[in-house]
Length: 326
Ligand SMILES: [Ca+2]
Ligand SMILES: [Ca+2]
Ligand SMILES: [Zn+2]
Ligand SMILES: [Zn+2]
Image 1 (cartoon, rainbow, N blue to C red):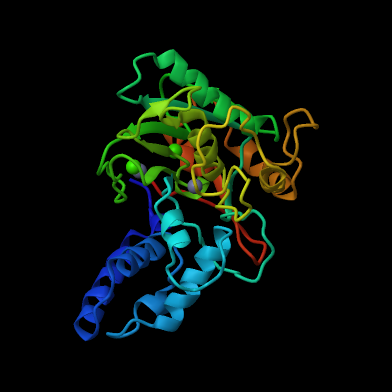
Image 2: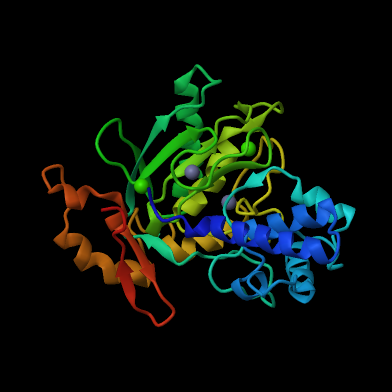
């Protein structure tokens, strides 16, 4: 039961109460209401714009709409037009588009959440398989390939583990599943994942028609590759062709990292050229910490806890090791 501030569940509730009070003053269209819920859920409405007394701050709403349109590569009209509704109805990842400080003036590029793993050998397990797919070995292969897309580009290694604690737990879940961010049935939200400081786990909506190597249904490998980007510390990118863009674009037999994804993941973990050892400054700083907590099988349980291997670097250059699941 990790922290789930990345999902904006509370801000969505705040949004509903504002819409209700506004509805007394003037009718609000169905699409405006849906759009406001969407913008709240994905982090486009900030605290001040969603808490402003009893009136909708239409200025803030317009800014939020434009912000979404810019992020999604649409015309920045500031109104909920058909193009915007279509984009909002696309199946997508459940993680917020805006994490931490928003900087709407920045160039189109990747975004880092702010935490990363301090070890390069990460373990994972599929603890709940998709209920519609009986061949678990095929699912194993899809998940393995999704991790490989990131290990090919970095110093990271991903090791499947059948028992004991793992860093990244992979689960196909239905509806409410214990983290306050319930899945919504077929379509819309496909999956979500926790950033390293919140444990790195990845959840997939089991009510989707998950498929493997097919134009029918929703491709497991593609969605998993995207979610593992979050598990490793990447936020959503506003580069349309990036793997870390939030929208599901349909089955792509040649799915691979975009240049933008490559720059993002290498900014955190370095490249693969130095024989699997991280080369970023942050890794060097962490070396002595890792050495004092050797990852061996007879280490106390505390050292086996996956969340203790996550580290966050703040803007003032300080490094924090996270421990949030005790
Ligand atoms: Ca869904
Ligand atoms: Ca975890
Ligand atoms: Zn995502
Ligand atoms: Zn979940």
